[in-house]
Image (cartoon, rainbow, N blue to C red; front, side):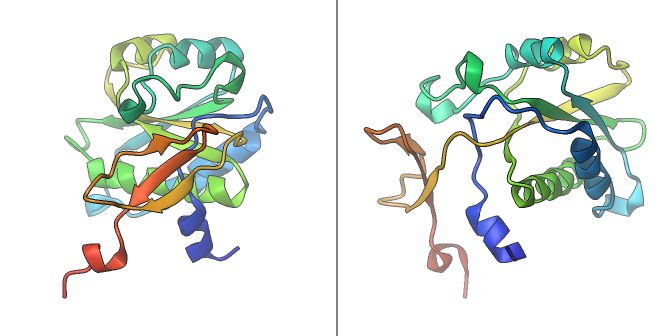
Length: 188
């Protein structure tokens, strides 16, 4: 699969199989992300891998899923992610490295897609509780959580109709994700 196909087929996954992910593969994702661009090369991002069931179950309770669907597409107990990568930063190094985090998160999502692992980046989270669960030093700010697992759903891309960008479920519970066309996003 080439890089275009990886990006074209990558969708946020919210339903996962109950299959563990090898820890070495998760470390490989972080290794891939740490090599992404960083503003002024400050490299303020730190990563935390959560894979132990008691920790992932606790983290799950502090995440909000699929806002447009009002909880209708949250993973059930046996559809939960098998791992999380937390994106943290040291605010003494950089105040708000959102571009660095975006680049690193996307790098991991593409690498996960390459390895046939689904991902979903979550920012609607209870940060303080997650830091406590993972016993992470308070000098770090938690920006986001990347959920990971082998996909148990296959979202499809749809054309945006009448400006409606909200993703939706059909009668068979397939997730549809509207995307603007190239003509709509490319200013000439």
